[in-house]
Length: 295
Image (cartoon, rainbow, N blue to C red; front, side, top):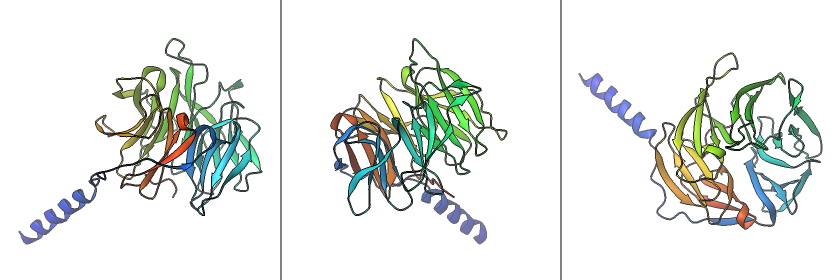
């Protein structure tokens, strides 16, 4: 009996440990980067450098180092939107103007094209991307699509450089993220104002997407998971980042300190939000970190 009681206490402690802490009483947006032409694509590398697109002018990638200095880090020759960092510290970029997916060396100078077409057909213009823990890249290709013209697609780019189309007929697919257990791919369809998820299959295919949450107003953009498996969804017109469980329960809506909120990343126990209406990046201490990004 005593062993059962101890086991029960341990299980209860384990379950309790998985519960997210309460949000801070005050969550105040604090500007940390200014002078961004169109603020998008924030992401940290393993060393604490913050990357983002369109610093000073469109078409650049900016970098804020841990000592606080900010500079133009890279000229891509196109115009990147979403950014992520792989396990080797390379920047992976969705270059919507160049209609391609790029991999950029940490020196900011050596750039390789990972993909620019699907079965010989040029991409429409990749918007955002994410990586799973194995290094597989998933990206949305929405440019020119809308609710009335649902021609957007979602792709998988394997480490073998093979491109697979996972879904099409989408109304501006936008931000996306792989669940922490690596079993599902979540994405927002901006033209239909909802969050959807699709089961990822071992052979690289995916099940058809299912709607998880329908937002009452338009304007969904970038998303990212926190360490407790909740999705943080930036809402362009609403001026907020909304926290939603994987089964579609709204937990909190947090003001971002400006309008046209485009994307999000985590560092330590804060979120960093690109706020295009203010041409800036805002940091909010939220008491939780992001989900694991690298093995």
